[in-house]
Amino acid sequence: MNECKMPGQLIENLLKERGWTQKTLSTVLERGKGSITKIIAGKQAIDAKTALLLEEVFGVPAERFLELQRNYDLAIARFSARPDPARSKRAHLYAGLPIPTMVKRGWLSANDPHNVAEVENALMQFFEASSLEEIEILPHAAKKTAINTDATPAQLAWLYRVKAIAQELVLPRYSPESLRAALPQLKQFMCAPEEARNVPRLLAERGVRFVIVESLPGTKIDGVCFWLKNNSPVIGMALRHDRIDNFWFVLRHEIEHVLQEHGKQAMILDVELEGKRAGTGLDVPEEERMANEAAANFCVPQAKLQAFIAGKEPLVSERDLLGFSKILGVHPGIMAGQLQHKTGRYDRFRQYLEKIRSCISPNAATDGWGDIYPLGQ
Image 1: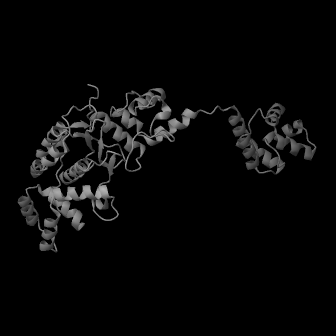
Image 2: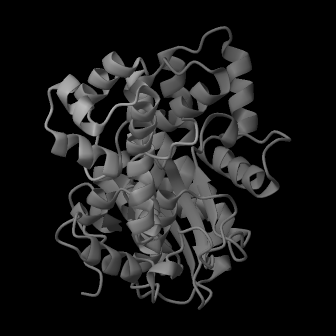
Image 3: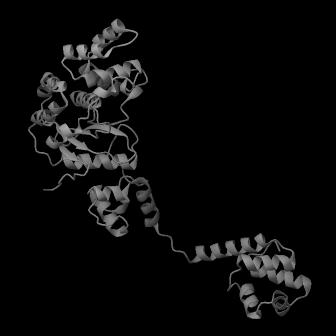
């Protein structure tokens, strides 16, 4: 009986052991002979109720009959099934990308996220692929985008959106000297959240393509720096944390990448640019260490900050914060953010961490938060 491949074979063996005929079994079970014949011939499946009846009659566990039936059904299905390579690709795409969100936000030219053919064509267009196999997030696909770190499919999709928008911007030729010379002027915009509206214009005049794209769920992207073929630098920001301190730190971080010509060989993708990743320790990559140092000193000169903290220990008062911010000419929220990072007291001065997205987005190439950037228009 161990060699039985289907439940009908097991039943036949059991009948032979007892010298029974199919008619006898049908009488014992009070089932029609035709039903027993179909089960033995494999033309009718054994259900749980029948398996229990056979267990009662033959003393063979019902699980044995059901296991044979399951294995037989699977074998028949495998024999008749036609493998579809596109199915595994489709599973990878839908597992790695938030397709409904991308459709809703206008990234994909598809009306229905469940229309497979429509979505696949839209994805090929989005990822600049001539076939489904060439979509970059698929395993074995030729990787076209060089990035400084492993990127998830959703992060890569965000990069493609930033790139698509950046390519449409028409700006003067980039000048590193002009960008560096503009830093003091950029510093003047740090006194109030609404002054951030001037940032896109200032960067554009220096030939830097500045793009804001809301991140996809779970991507935790803060910014990116890369270069287009015509030697034009791109700074993309997600404004994941809508706070004045975070905006200025990330912005200056990406500007330093541009000034150092980071991102020319591989896109510099900054993910979770906070905590240790915003520091300058030995475990931080050199490019990131340089950008973090420049950003921190731009927000609040670190030597002055250390001296300020040392002189006000054990606790900095609100009056101290406001006074020092006024001396530096920066918004108290920027000073508060740096104090929190240095002291680890993220519960203090939170009331000064004002929102900034509404101040900068109207004047920048922005995509997200209910608005779709009009590509191709």
